[in-house]
Length: 342
Image (cartoon, rainbow, N blue to C red; front, side, top):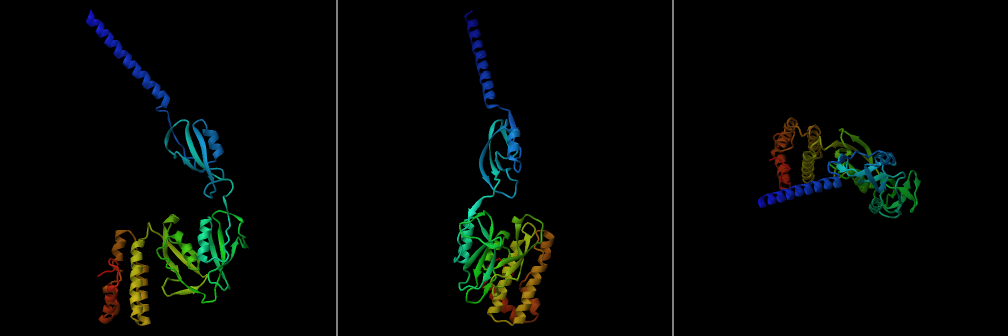
């Protein structure tokens, strides 16, 4: 009799414990809405008012900022958090950045009498950039004489759309109106315009030889061709050819260019005949033009037959071992290991 009461009490305790646990889990599930998840759509590019009206029961929309963008329509989503395809609870806060209906504006700084380099730095710090350079007669070389926007002088303090490009009128100076070409070869496309402007030059024609995203392009060729001794008139235009680094081996291309520059520098230092230097230059140009610089294994095998090494020099000079030795040995003394074929 006494044992039965103990068993009954124990059973009651177990039943109550199980019941309490079940009630607790059920309550917690209801509180957290476990399993009640929804997938976040991709709102980027869609009109904010329309989206909020349609999804206001699913999300609590919170505006973080408004920015100007040409990529998406005015009044549309520019960014969102959580990201598209995220699993969230219904009623979750959704933070977003909206494309403003008016472009952001900045104040035009005063660039007059600054050096070209100072003016470019100041423009960048104000969210602006240089469109091109116009050189005029002025006593101070590379000094900014005037600042132009859309064909007219723009005064300091004028509000201008952020990201706009400004033409700079710059002085020739009283000295020679020539400047050295910068070496653009293998440079990234986004750096080309800045590099030319810093050298007091303008961008000319831009030719895209591959079909890829512009962030993948680097300079494959330029006209006038780069030479450390070449001088061009201030404000001249330079044409540029681009290739995609996803399709073109710029590392190998850069090594061959370095090799060409090294060999020619040695020949000029030793005062070789101009005809000989031209022959070597033409030989390098032939190699650089006809090598494929591809990542494909078959193309790489083909490229091995077009390498400027000692064998190639011996082929050029035939039986003239003195020329081969004088060029090749001196290059080896000043070389950067890894760039040259022994």
